[in-house]
Length: 236
Image (cartoon, rainbow, N blue to C red; front, side, top):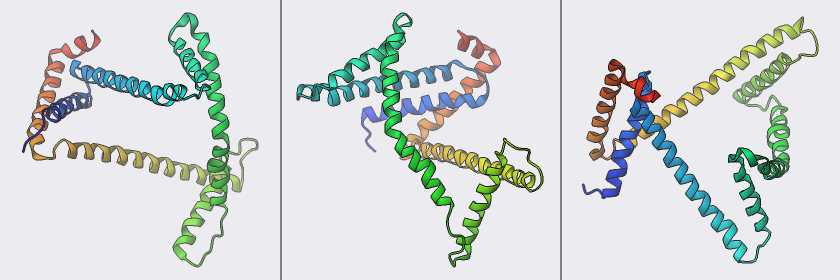
């Protein structure tokens, strides 16, 4: 199978850097992991800078040349934000940051009210019985969960009697919810890992490089750990 040189190089280097970063699972510091992390951050920063400059050119410079002069103000505010990295003049960046935060808050306020507040209430206050037993079970569970969990957050009065049992039920229901969210997050991360492993093992020509990179990184992590060089070189 013929493979282009660029694709081959990018794939092999990417596989090796990936397994260098996976050596963090060994539990001990080593320089190849640090090198891989710094390489990833440097590459990500470079890509972000290029995309940012491309966006500025296409959305600001081109439109200013077309006569949309109001965008000059946006460029000035953007340049003022760069003063954030200079301690002596970082106060200059407060104005554009405050302006952008205020505008974003104003634009998102209406959306937040509807999506995170009103529609959540509308989705909760619904008719329980619709003639479908399973739908009734789902809606009843949601209603009980909302009521009991809200009773857990009654901090302005002493929780006694029925409210005490309700708050306890709400507490355990929150534990179930947090556990489900954690499990979903874990499965999502596991899915990403499985997808990446599939990507670096197919087509078949990638498999030898994947195995060799994994073995090299594992041997290097063990050597750095046993000789004590890992902590010295990583700290340096």
